[in-house]
Image (cartoon, rainbow, N blue to C red):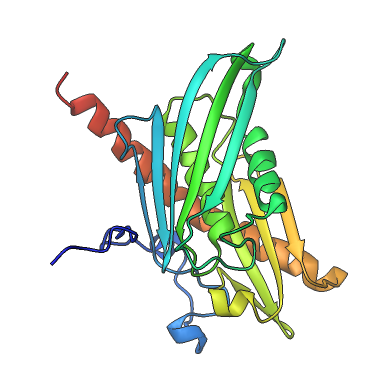
Length: 251
């Protein structure tokens, strides 16, 4: 029987970023997750041989694939230029940040801003770096996953970075803040997407939807930053494994 060519099956294995977090008391609800607990995540760098750099991130049912090309000539005078394209596949069941027919301009702008803060563009004078991010399936928090995936692909391509840009998403249902929301949780209230350069503890991008009060917004930013710090070691480990595979691969 022929398979469904429209669906890209992700890897079955996954690794939770909570492996690197301090054990705490589990909370009830959210299908077994606490309010500040992210979903299990699978990350792999360097899986596309035809790209200078690539990465794949899967968080729960959300799947994102990224590829990088360049540097190549054609940039403006002075420093280099970063070109980013973010798309949702037609079959991705797009969430709050986009729709299959009309990808959100704000989501693409946040990806651009987050990566520009991380890349040392002055190292690539008059050159262009192109990043393509494709959301294969969106079951919530696809935009922060795309930020982490694109940053990892740039690092896999050997692009000089100040730090990896790590994304985290959050939603607010009533008075409760929910880290790494699923699609149903995103649709229930206000949402936030934040990107962080963890080693520098610097926020490189922030995008909110819905209404936020000052106290809840500040608490949400702190929770997102903590989520980025949890995911950071997982991305580093994936990049290290990809580098080892390149070193040991036959020439």
